[in-house]
Length: 329
Image 1 (cartoon, one colour):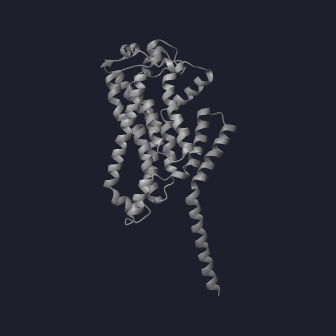
Image 2 (cartoon, rainbow, N blue to C red):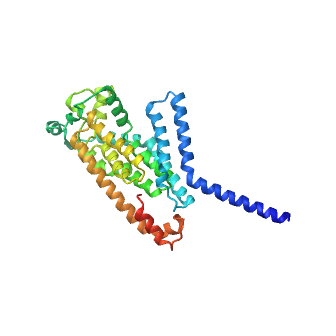
């Protein structure tokens, strides 16, 4: 009798463990969201850090809570983590050291002769200075758009990339990371090495829209590399990808932020209209190029994915096909 009860007890424990794991697998994103929300509230109440970091923590909580509609239940945890963790480490490295690498490239560029100086041409093109977007100006709007622009090079990529990680979707992580910075750097660098174009306010002799209090020498270097606008190309690429998300709240709010980055480049007299248009074209080309590479790559390693990555057996092709037909990744 005792042996029977012991077996029954073990079976009950196994069932409870399975149910607990199943619940955790379904609702882990809530725990992540609550962690970020708690951190955001404590930081907002007790920390002297800047408002941009406080807002960032609240945005991480928002991204976590809205990830439920994108959760990938067809993917195994261990293979995903084996891919996700090194990629996030790489992203963190770029986030810390990327500006230093970019600065070395700019220093090398400034040491070379200018191939084509676009300053005189761009300053003479009607409406190219985007003065019409500054028809209405206020201190509040200027403060908001400065905040948007100052975080507009990295934040448009990081938030949806982290949200894709919470959704357990490595392909989407790659799509955001490649479209946002990694591929764009290679595509845009030849333009920066070939053309000399400076920010609108500097060329026209206006006050700095970002109020950076730069010395004349520092301003001459900081205001380089306007064509195309990389703030625009990154933000607009993320806007194009965010439109594919299922969750409407995240799609609309983050889409608005990405477009606000584009608007801020003109409102603050950073970029010319032609810079912005060229940046949007670069974004479109980058997204399509990354789509092509990832789709071709998925075909080449489809057998490996079916065997080791997806939780369904390779024979369940109908399930996988139906998932990708209806999925927006």
